[in-house]
Image (cartoon, rainbow, N blue to C red; front, side, top):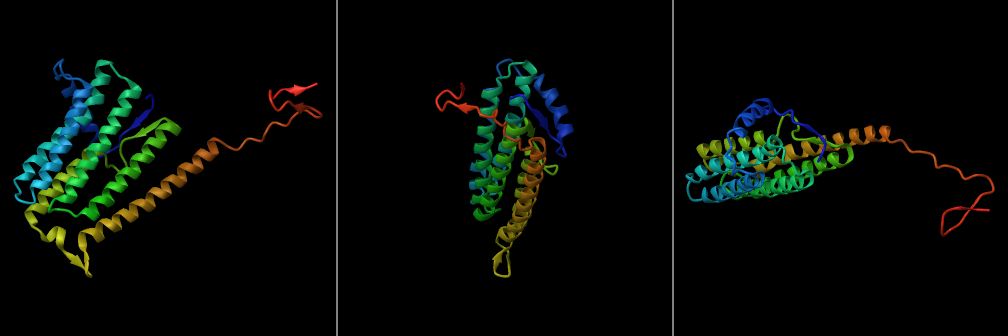
Length: 240
């Protein structure tokens, strides 16, 4: 879809340069759809790895490999289409973001099933992701603006955060996800507070955007009918 793409994440500049080099080296057999499938397969591998970590931290090998594959496929599918000038705007937009929703759900729920996180915390993170995704898609429709990052965080930074947290939690042991604060799970409490703060910030952003749109589209006074003119209820035309 024709819209302004905005990505001001911390790694956006370096990532763009890397993708520009990678896309020129992809074989002719590589297609955007294939790369999208690789991204989803990587997310599935992440989920499997997280579940496997319940028995052995060797599952982290699958997690890291899956995060890389997810980044590779998700970041290069659209880049390849634009590089080869084979974009299919509506099809590409639909399949890309459908794949993103599936992939991120697999990654976050998989994290919740691992020994490094909890299901309540994972569901809070997932709800925020879906909330921000919905807002992003609304802005595409209403303003033709596609924002790919918020507060310096984009999909790439999120993957790095998930991988880093998993490695740190594995090194620290079960106390990371099981510690209690005033009788509550400390991780759930921290994620809950962060989620609440993020939600309030989101409400503020929506309010500001709504005010801006109200100024851009003020209420127009209805056009008054000519004095003495009657309208035909069927045809909507003035009657003699």
